[in-house]
Length: 202
Image (cartoon, rainbow, N blue to C red; front, side, top):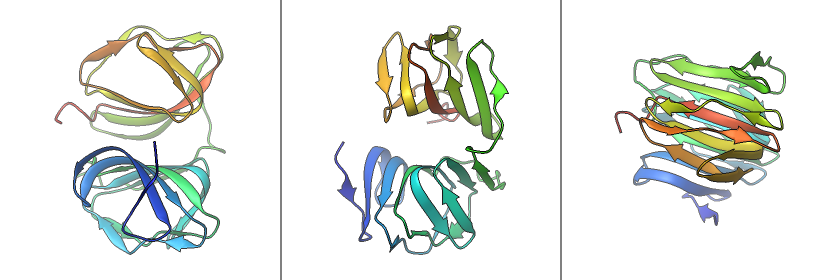
């Protein structure tokens, strides 16, 4: 996908999905050039992002590649970067009553064993029916057939993720609707960012 400019110089994006105008429920890849900054703003219905490359910053801290951040509804900040960075960003998907801020450096956090051999999971955030996690698949890992209550969304951080519908290398984003089903696997191994349970009311 081509990068498209935002209203702020030095910041471009790839709009994966969008419902609204400049203020919108949206999923995007956002690239900050080095020494760029965004205007101070609030997140009326929250923000989630995962740093894919570089170091993202705001007045609350620095977030190197591999950092997951959830800013709750009503929070605000003034983002910038010295090095430049690329983010996977979700806006306006949070329950207004979810007021917990989450910051996790996945490069240093522990993995938990998954439900099948070869699968490891790093829980990132959970509220109501919604869960966000990083999932690492060893080569040759096959998961059980299952159905997604509230849907499932996947961004492939590394490697190649697969299911009966297709093959998804690094950089692919996919969304499966409420009550969809599949049998996922990875022949080559992969790491995916997964969000579930957030689509049943959309």
